[in-house]
Image (cartoon, rainbow, N blue to C red; front, side, top):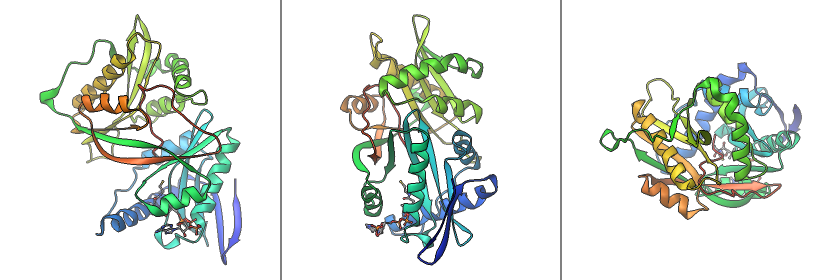
Length: 324
Ligand SMILES: CC(C)(COP(=O)(O)OP(=O)(O)OC[C@H]1O[C@@H](n2cnc3c(N)ncnc32)[C@H](O)[C@@H]1OP(=O)(O)O)[C@@H](O)C(=O)NCCC(=O)NCCS
């Protein structure tokens, strides 16, 4: 995809990101988020730069879906597309502060949507901050409908609270991934028939982003969790439970869900992490209450906005968010 246009006297080009764009795209992202956070809290903040490996992972997952926008030959923005089966989402999308409010963000978002539709996505979404009027305006005017809150929760990982890894769980070895993938496809479909999380499992191992914990019942894998533990060097206090999937036909799926959460925590402790994060749908009070019982506290929220089709998550014991 390549869009070359004259817009308000400027030449705008949108094209897939190349390796050579990565450093500038990371810098632009850092500028955009530093500006947003500084405005929000009323003092100057330097937002951390996105690790190179994370950008490379996005590019590995969707080589043509990571877009950069050039204004008069200067890189002023980027957007990353994610395809989970027939569900597509964009994140993050960012424009250099000096180039904002000129319609460039809209052009870039349109190009990402076009990419996702061509990849077969029947639902397109984004998660954004509900307290940012500009962001809400940007997406609602773009045809997105606010659908649900995503709860951002955190928990300190304390040695004093450590428990042995639940006997029903274990860490998956990379060599077992191919056998796990058909199960991931099945469990994804239980959440929503359009959904397939396989690429996230592949990326986790391929790019060494963390660990996959699995839950076994009667000798078969019936649940899986992705613990994202990769951090840039010198910043190794955090990790995040990115995804939890549990077979809803198990006799006690909540027990399986809690076992997977504890398996992730035990792993986090083993890795020396001090805090563990998790983002999940606020649509189900039971999930929130179970996570609260597990010691997670609400830190913030995002709002999921959706366009094209509608999207609901049909299982409760599930952790996932559309956040880059
Ligand atoms: C969100 C972002 C990508 C938009 O890029 P952009 O190039 O400024 O977007 P556009 O110029 O196409 O559109 C901005 C719209 O917001 C409107 N706007 C600007 N400030 C606003 C405010 N305070 N309140 C409401 N609307 C506002 C503009 O008028 C424009 O709307 P219009 O097209 O209906 O006139 C950019 O602001 C950014 O990088 N933000 C920081 C990172 C971020 O928040 N990313 C999104 C995460 S989900």
